[in-house]
Length: 248
Image (cartoon, rainbow, N blue to C red; front, top):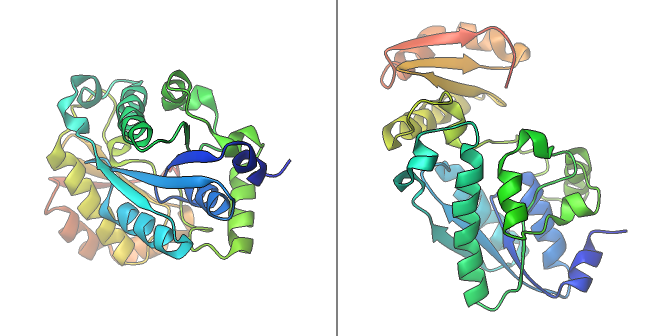
């Protein structure tokens, strides 16, 4: 079965749109169907600005209406205490906000970009989606991450090779309190490394220490720019470490 059949069956769909590859392809299929659709992006302290920029660009290119909702994820102790299942509480809050807006606009189906490669055991947030009756068409139609990238490339979507990007909260050690300051320093530091051409990396927070995780094929470049990188990151952290185990 083809994904577009989902939109043949469901004619009124609100799509949770993150700006990433999966939800972008879902939105592409929706935009080329006869369904009545609208994309909803939730802006919070957990999302870097470039994600919103990408979401706006994709919505323009697909000529889809994009609604931007603001969610205060930092006023919930269940989220900021950063427990193992933090993602569950965060998804519950974010998707509840989308559902409220979408239902008020007359949409009766809410869909997200979870794909068939995503394992429920590794993603506590998927439990929240199930409880809220959010549909995941990519997953339902058996489309994996590789399928999404291939089909997105064939469709000419600029997101086809966009690196997977977990939210900024994932950079903070489990159990460590999440604050706006910690999130912003992560965003600024990662934006700096991205400006130097690095890809598929993470900067983890260990208290007041930055731990850089980067693929092996970029280590030599990182070392060659060591002084420049250290100088910039120490504007935000007391020390900078390099993780030699590749675990992005």
